[in-house]
Length: 205
Image (cartoon, rainbow, N blue to C red):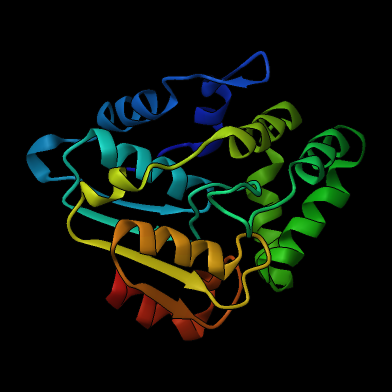
């Protein structure tokens, strides 16, 4: 089953603020679409990885795989390698004025080639601008507790070495806090979509 991450962000952001019970509500959203008899195996990428961590802290997760993940997206004492909050705020505002420019920059920072970017554009075309802005608000406010990750077993944390969205060092902090190794791959934020990484990602996950 696939969780609609952006739709979930819409439900978790109320009046531009992240629901204080967002982690529990995220876990409940995942519980609602899974069969507990089959065991719970979660793979999360980027924003989805933050949500996967929350689920692991509130559900009985047998296998957790995090791709391009971080404790916190914006710069803080917990994550000195995050984005300055002001830049993310400006990005959210600019989405309303020049959505295509913001998305094109995102595809470029993800390291997507032209076919990948075109495919991503098709997927994102049906997502409203307000929903994308709520996705950024989620990233500005959500924070992962390392204890959530420790509740799952096994845990695999994979990261692209040249990630321009979530710094490799931020992924390292997450792995260190969770007490698990960080597995590095060549490539950027969407490293898992690169052909040369496919076999390694599948084996690691």
